[in-house]
Image (tube, rainbow, N blue to C red; front, side, top):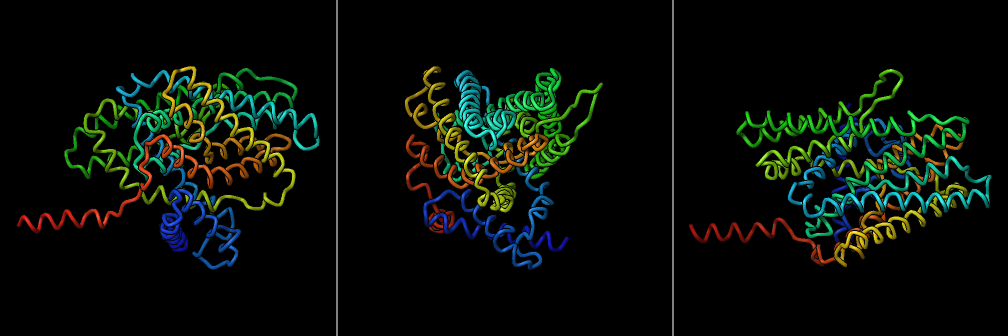
Length: 431
């Protein structure tokens, strides 16, 4: 236990110190946290084998998965807070249309590219793996996007639409993956199960939305009994922890596998809560401050979890290169086309696609499920490679896109210490 605490403390300190270097290089803090994780991981300092100083194995990082799951719950809760009724009325149709179309277009483009690769080199990748990777390509990482938006205090039409599209993207990606994986499994086994391909993914989304809505209502009903800000914040944190815990449970009813999507549950809870609680905005701000260290740990642990051994696998590098190139093309062209269809502002149309490139936890979770395929290990390696590239490059591209859309000030950096000094000086002068 003491080694775990020391590891977490060092991870947090390393992430913070690396963010100072990133500030000098004008890079987003998210990239710094990921690099700090790589340095502390089993392929760098972890190799030294010093107890508590870095992570010696990937299993050690996996053992701290609960920290990442809780952080992801808070991130999803915060994104759900963006779905306020006034925004849904003005941008809801656009967000839903773009969220669905760009995900489907990306899947189709990656599917075609990998199936062509299979036809050229059938020994490299099977049809089932090609179809599965196409569906995984639809997933976008909400955590990196939200962190960049918060760090630079981005605000504007593109930022608001981006957060909504990222949230919708996860629901669409879940359906696409479940259907594609069901078809891929059927191709290998020789039979198609309608329950696995159609019913179970829809059931997962419905169960997740219902659980999230109930949690949001219960949170609002209970928080009215507390007037202290700290107690209401504590109650909000307790509910996020509760929903994360429930979301990790799985069960069967009549032979049908039932489970929840952690992201959808926490997003829905945040959406319902922010629309029925008049003081939700102030409360969310306090929760965000409390969870800041948790978010840093999430990215440092994500960086430590990246398996650099895949860089020595030529097959994974080739398939990964095709996957990354065509996924990027799919996201950018899909967002561009869907923005044109929904008559979005020119700045949104030009820059939204680039902000949808980051990919992490959701894609890795899908890849773990796909490990049941004949060459499931290859699917996981390709996704790991893409996560390594997208997580290191994606936040910087997101930042540049938001700057180009004029929703981040170019300087984007202020010192809290220097900002507070003048305020203190004014108070002293008045006295």
